[in-house]
Image (cartoon, rainbow, N blue to C red; front, side, top):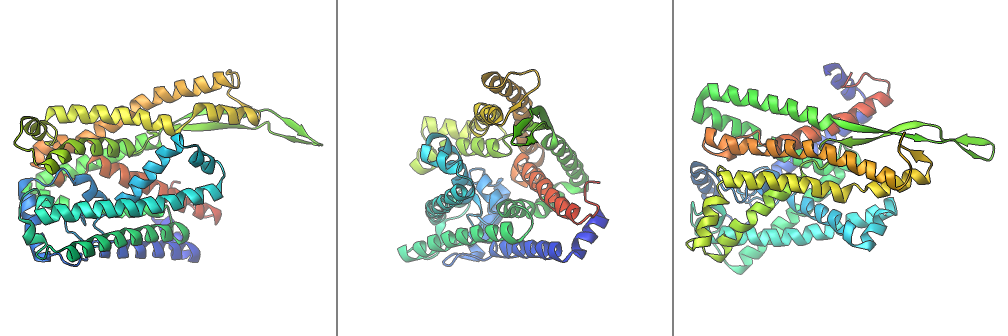
Length: 436
């Protein structure tokens, strides 16, 4: 593997792509430390210290994760890549229900370019909404869970100052989109995935060191061993797939024979990726967000929600979280993989699964196989997501536990895909790759 790295840097084209990608990652992380105009940086740091002592803000934990910790520091990249992720998921869901988007999806590269353009517009709209919400919560002191007053974070709370903060954060999201597209075009791997990887991985050193400082070296090495075990489990499951064999009959077109080949349909055990965890986390944030915005924290239903649905170490929270992840895993797989469409395409080109008739029987068989492998995949996602919640009882706050389910899935998934792309480029030049 080290030899392959050396050969990759000896190849001028691949070396330039790797260095360009690393340069964009450095720029991205630098932007995550530049404060937004109008924010008292010293006051923010003081609020963060108070927040960490109280256990962290669980309500904004997911958004802060994808921003690489930039959200709670209120920097120009505070929104991170989250608006783009949300808009991409929304467009993907709307493709199922809006015929126009479905037609664009089937048009190939031209249609995909149009959908990408719609994703950009929606990203800007969501960035404006999210930036406004963050500025409002920072202004009233709710961003740090009441750990400090809003005047300490935003001393000048005029309309002009808030508007400047919103515009700056929205512009930061636009720059992040541009950086991601630059990496996709001129670097290595998918640009947006690389930026998400950078945001998540950047928090590992500080979180690990905080565990060492508060619990000692023994716990520190215990967490390292646990993290390595989780990485091994995630790699094993993420690489696992059910290969459905497909054969194509020979066809005579003129004097030439086409087809007669054998291939397979790879169905991954974790077909949904990290999306179900994002959906479940976002849905569980809604009740606490409603209570916070309505100011009904002292009412009976507000107190019940504060007690049961905001504390991630509560057994009811864990059960609901696990059930939602399993549900969204099946839901997302159902809308992203259409067995009938796959069966029709196979029938159109003369393909069939050995022992299964073409057409409807093939679609039913694919649906059966997909359901069988989605069950272990969804249970695996649920168990992985519960690891930081269980660690809450061991390390006082899940925000200090670096190897959460979402973090590990993102880091391992993006790492595997990037290594595969480098591997393919090395093989094109007859070099020994990473995986040999």
